[in-house]
Amino acid sequence: MSGSPKFSEAEIVEWKQKILEAERQRRSEAEARRRQEAEEQERQRQLEMFRNQTHIHVNVLLSDLHWQWANFYVQEAVALQYRCQNQLEAIACAESLEKLLAISEELVRIEVAMQEASKRKRWDEAEKKRRADIERQQFELEELQRRVAQIPEAEALKFDAAGRQLLQRVLQNVQEAIAVGNPIAVRRPLAEATALVQKHVRQIVQGQVDSRQLQVQANQQLAELQVILAGLKADPVVMRWQRQAVTELENQTNAAKLAIADGQFKQVISSLSESQQRSQIIIETANTAQIQAEQRDYIADSIAQTLQEMGFSITFHQPEHPEHPASAMILGATTQAGKGISVSVPIAGQVFYDVDGYVKHSVATVDGNTAAICDEAEQMLTQMHTALEDKFGVMMGEVLWQGKDPKRVLRQADQLPSSQQTRSRSV
Image 1: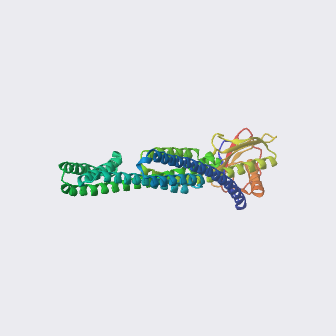
Image 2: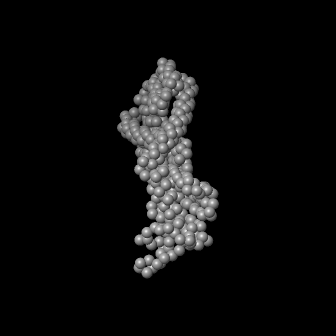
Image 3: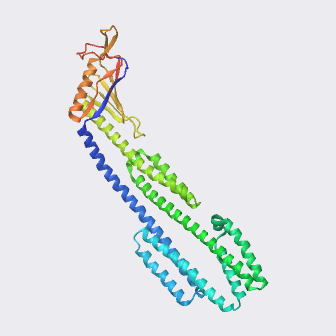
């Protein structure tokens, strides 16, 4: 027989499809539990890491408080120390990232309170020393200069570069007016400088708050993506079908870490949001591929069992490309009479057959053309299709091959040459 292709298409009846989907659902639930366990472990790791960072922050504040103890009134220093120590207990008892974030904000408030308490004492001590207006004005100028100096140059240029440049000129004017020694002449430029410093500080603080909020949002989205990534990597189905996509997602996560460190918060937030949406697509794509693979395996197993029941011996049953999960499943079978068949079941599409040892000849059709006849092989394949549908719910289409007369009625084959092959497919 010639090596002409035959075709047939495999479908699974509705009840069998439901069984496969139910089994996929059961496995998906197990896989979801595995992802949830991995996600919970990652949350706990992040919680403990942030707990340690917050604990270090408290110790730094206590150390600063001890070092600057003389710069505070005793009662304020004791109160600040008590507030810091209270946070140590709260940190130990915190059971969520939100509670630790609240403690972190309280630490920022304590730090601001320390600065305010230090400033109050400096101010009071300076007032005792400065009895004259000019001395008080000099101190006020120094306080303005100190407030400006406390703002890092990079922060000032980032959030209010023009205001910083103007302040330098105004403060210089106040210093020159104080040097003259006339307090009345100092009042107006000093008031202007005070207003400008307050405006400059407000703008810097607002910029820092906005930047910190963006940073917190970016870090939260990054943490959520890391949790999702841990779940994906723990899911064997995802890693089987979507390993490259998971690797790309992990690379995006690592890039986001670098971008956050570089202060590119808005860009990171946008990219992380897209990555989180991509993670859901990865899961859905992997599950769809797994269902198709299980359908492929079910069809191949059904064909193998049917052929055995028809008297064939299975010679091989394996993936065509073992290194690729989407490979077609191939199997071969032979009879003691020397007849053979090989089958290729793809993950989606048509099932192909190669048959050997079956007779074939050609006949003239009513329209004067020639049609190929392979009744013996067709009868065997038709018998197999019937058994597949009855026992396994696998519905195969009509057996077709190149040159077949579509109007031909199946008949018993005569003696045909056995040294050629016929390749068929189911459609």
